[in-house]
Image (cartoon, rainbow, N blue to C red; front, side, top):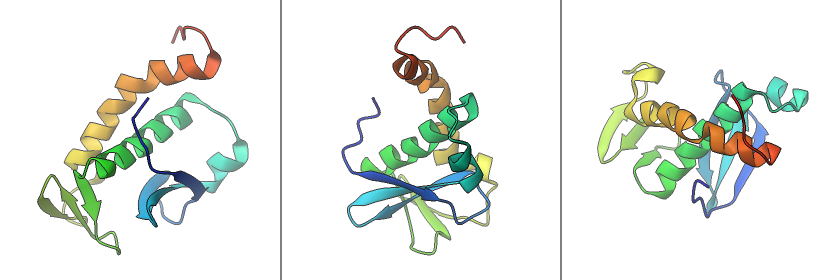
Length: 119
C-alpha cells in the first residue's frame, strides 16, 4: 500500500517517542514503545503510529528524508534541520506523516478487518 520495497524490522524503542525509524543495513528498523508491543492490540492509535512511522520509511526510500547517525540533524528535501531547533510537530516531514495517517487509516483498517471500516 505504501510502496516500500526495503525490509522493515520492529524492535522496542530506545527513546521517549512512541515510535521512530532508523535506516540500517539496507533496511529499516521501526522502534516502538515496548508497552505498545506488549499489549499486542491494534488500536486506532497503534494503526496511526505504524502508518506514521512507515511513511517516514517511504520518505527515506524516496530520498526526501535522511539524518545523521546521531539523529541530531535531518535533511528534508535537501534542507538541513537541527533537530533541537524545531518542535517535533512543526517539522515538515512530520507534518506530512501526520497527514498520511488520515489518508491511509481507512484503507489499513479495511485490509485488517477484511471489510469496510465504518469508523
